[in-house]
Image (tube, rainbow, N blue to C red; front, side):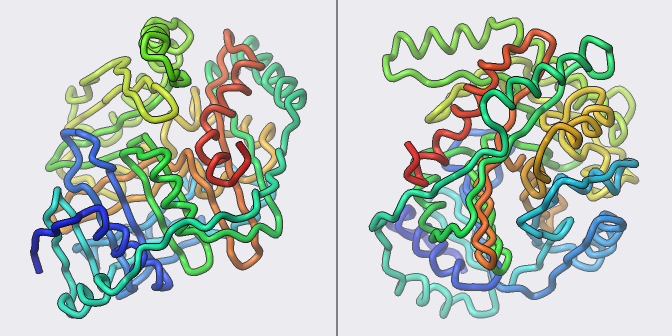
Length: 421
């Protein structure tokens, strides 16, 4: 079923509200960002026709077979801890969210939104449209502030950054992405309401609401991990962050300072080199190139430095293998990749789980698109555990106090919707 909606914003809200009533639902929203690789403005997938839950060990192998059996639409997520399957790594930090290593499902109902055009793919399209139109738009009524606790005090964080820098001085690593968690026990939230407010406050191009029974991914990500368009693979790592300013002249100055900041450019070029190396495992020889280096993009809370790396995929290589070859994404690990992942397991105090992982889709035309799960709240409604991870790149020149402040800037939108700011 195809039709034009006279109020696409209201339709999206109603459709998401309808979809969230199912046990599993995935909502992807580009928030109208102009991007040459974005295929639609929003996707809503719900109702489980088939599903794959795979624990770490043979998860990619299971997904390979599952994708072969189901070549149409499917959406799902990868957790960061799949690194333990790809490399000889392990994780012993506590996990309070208990998501599977990866999860994908073939939806019963799929809604694609492009501009004001709506495409519903389902055996029951007419009834679905009627159910969506019946939905009332909910308005936020207010709730008690959530008492988030840090895993690191500021001084603990600063001390840990300095220990990481000792490894950099010794030559063990060059750069790492060090992450810390803020968390709340016995937290009671309305996940859909929190997502709607977060997406309104911080409307980023890879936003996502993913409901996996009683577990939720509430995501305002600005970063693409990996997309495939035809035989082209695209990765757009982010390294470099600056806080937006209310004054236009000051904001433009901050943007210029980000563009010319040698530390930020050093971080960005390091991750670009890492992504280029990862893509060579999937690329036709000589096709890896950097389409854009040090691009500055502005979002509601921050300016970001984003680069774009592309290649032509080897004809014989599956899409699942191409993802495995680049996972986890270099912007969330560091360099050298394996050494930094080993070290961060020692220094971090909780398991990342799906944070630093990815949510996205495979489509029947052979394309796929996956984000980087950052700027995200994770919620387990069963045990009432709420988690917010945030990280930053640690280099030899990094100032630990400034890195801590950068983490707070990145978390600011999530803090605000939880009533903390």
